[in-house]
Image (cartoon, rainbow, N blue to C red; front, side, top):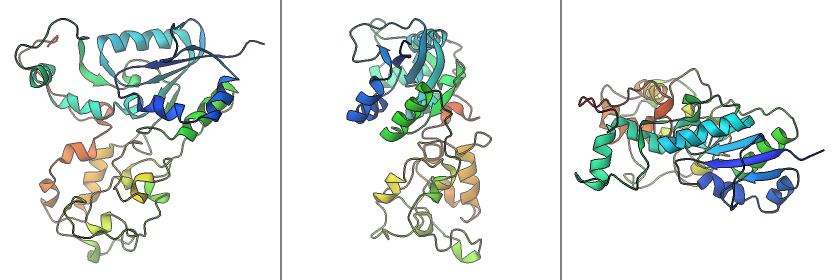
Amino acid sequence: MSKPRLAHVVLGGCEGCYVSLLDAGEGLLDLLGKVELVASPILAEDDLTECDVVIVEGAVTTEMDERKLLAARAASKTLIALGSCAVLGGIGGLRNLYPTREVLEDVYGEDKPSEGLPKLTRRVKALSDVVEVDISIPGCAPETEAIISALTNVVEGRDLDLPRRNLCDECAREKRALLEPTAEFLTDAVYGIMELDEIDPALCFLEQGVICMGPMTREGCGALCTGAGVPCRGCHGPSRHDFEQGAKMIDALAAVLPAGAIMFLDDLVGTGYRFSMPVSVFPEAYDHGGDEDA
């Protein structure tokens, strides 16, 4: 029997997911022994005809991205959205807060070049906004083992179940009062990690007044950030698709913060929707100039 045909397509993003895949080392060689790799950033030529599995990383940020994604969907039996940009829209999705014209002028000035640049879409989109996605592997970037495990399961015809609990369940930091809804847990301020003279390395960030997206974020990364002394920023997206990651976090914080305190966050929207704005109900910026191409 012929080997399954595997393709890897990269859209708008940093290609960190691709680096995470390459980090598999010998494990990647084992996977490649089971498939025929027909398209990839490392191949001189791509062949997207009749693929069994196509991995797509990156968000749809340009019209070229959209054409590549449609071609990948048409060619594939199974399409995998790899990484937070593909699944959620990613950090680049914060562009949706501004009209495209303003974004280009901010980068290039009023005399923005008209040639040599791919035409931007009016907003950044997750893959699921454009095509049907069969499997989603979130993370910025996804853990190498998670990528290899998912690809191996798909190639060998096994089901893939993603974690559904939130990050707090795999975070080793101690929760002394977080799980007990008492008045003593109320705090009067919100801090960034650089604003505190000392941070307890073993205690939950939220119990120290530091915003952490763990309660509203899917587990699966091994809580690497919180273990390294950095609060979760939500790159795995919500543990369920039926709630707004940012709005739920704001709602939860409102229960333990005095009225208005949360509004003193320097970047409230960027904290709650850093990776998931394109798949949220948050309104996109509308250019009242009426130029859809701007």
